[in-house]
Image (cartoon, helix red, strand yellow):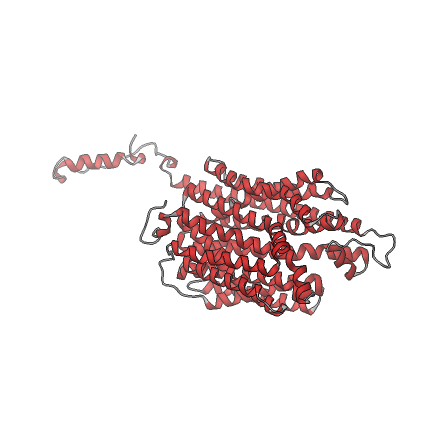
Length: 542
């Protein structure tokens, strides 16, 4: 545990770390599960509420958009007003949103409730990361974040399988109600935690908060609408331009803010930037495969949802084990940058090898690509958050946690939108029909009227191969950049340490130490003391 200081006292929760970790881990399990699992319920929701198109898709998009836009703000508010308070408030809003989702009478009410649920999720995710960062330190922090990575990865990976079973057994309303009840458990758990916050006087950066939330929300919204409305439509270009302008204004505002919602100096820290890029790259490497591969397997290989879920276990099982392995490697002296770069290379290899995808592919042929991708995800998820937190002081733990969660959540949102949009764009170019391209991308590989001689399954497979190759290249390039950032920052630290080390000081050939006259000294004791002090300095002693 860190030593308490007047600036950054240890919160009382550090005295009961097991309880703290259990409460935080429950949130990191349930929220990602609800995030990825809702996609399974969309079809049933559309049938029950007579909804389709953008209004139905907003059940998923609204949650992602609200959560990713507000995580940074939630983390900074935790630093100012209390991390436990933000976590508790987030759990209250999350549980309420789930309850309203379960009782929604129509699609509009459900869309609003899901957006509210995403707002609560932002408080739980950002607050939970900051609580762990300020409760643990050293090897204990590495192990704690390894557990967080394991739990979050398992929740995200198993979400579609578990939610599919729940929706089939209980219905989508009862599934939302179940997630809401777990939100109530999180609320109760916060009473076992103690509060921690930055010691300076809270000042809310209203201008920064407003411009960031609006700018990021508009930008993400525009990208999520691209595949449906068309990338050159006013529905996409308008929000995209407005969002980018607001984010530019946000940057200018933060440079002048006394207490910014995002301290831009964090981004000038090359090690922190390296870990941030690693979080982004992990989402790029795994997001599309995690969500869309089950759709391919069900549509092209005619697997049931249960069979597709079992196939995906080849990717999710490594996530159960490897986060703790990466933590042990670091605590035993393996440089963290080597572990995370290895993880990213495994992700790149998994995407590259999955280009063997073809109709009728068996589990044995999928084994190696999915194991590699899952191993990369597992190694990275157990390492990134903890290492990023070591680069900031405790007073900014919430801000840093919120920023990492924002990058990860926003990237996941964009990957889901861009992966599907890329498939549709490629298929549209091949089939010449946007409607047919959308159906085929969703796994409908029935013969297309008016297009004889075209095999939709083959066309979808070709589109998949192209997208996977691009993802593999992006992840590989990003891994090299991460390595450069972390290695260069480590070299800078080593140089700075060498410059300040006494062993690095060159002794002059001759040292002349003036000795004052004896009568200028009252007695011999000060002479001895001075001699000892002088000989403690290597530059003055031979």
